[in-house]
Length: 300
Ligand SMILES: [Zn+2]
Image (tube, rainbow, N blue to C red; front, side, top):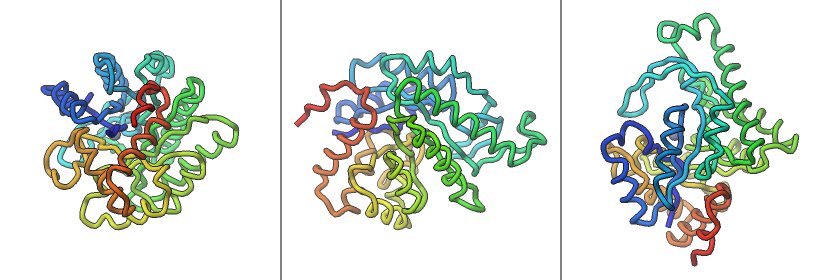
């Protein structure tokens, strides 16, 4: 049994078959958290989770790429974002739904930058202004998570020039909150693609580190080093579907069921029994997203 804690079955990629995709996962013992990336997909995540008696939960937040209008290429799919301002009251209302177990995805993304043509509001603000806007919005998410006592699902991607820059800035902001006794539920840094020293800083602050199908790709040895270097108790697995489909389904649309291949890869890297690793990963996810109902803890 596993929980894909970062799935986007609430996205348009599943507009024709979302229920079938969800049922397929549930019937195979894969639960999921549907993650919103702006107000519409956050609302849809809550509505979809509410339809299922068990096994489906939601997270609500505003992804940094939706702070400006821009064209985004996310492997095999191309889409345009709309500028949205984080409305704490609107997200607070959604987050109070009983099926909402986390705030996010939110965070910092220095990889994508708004072009002056596609982003009227970004015109003239420069790279510094764009990053500042992301920091302010991340802080609003942290404040809401602290207020509602919910864990976070964090997104972080560095610039092409310096892939660690966004991670360093995020760690500085998180440290400030943690040291002030805030965001005590911590949460997860999702789709981790940085170095072992950076991963250790998240772990030391109390966060779990999430891995996607990226760890199954060829040339993923640097992530194996990260996985070997942090305790299994602090690892989570996820799909980030419809993106990042793991081997052996590369090229196909991803879905929660495929989180199995990510868990298998973790077991292979850690040189541990597959079933023992699955059980531990399930327990880790339950611990982080502790609003997921208690009966699931008692599974033997
Ligand atoms: Zn995502």
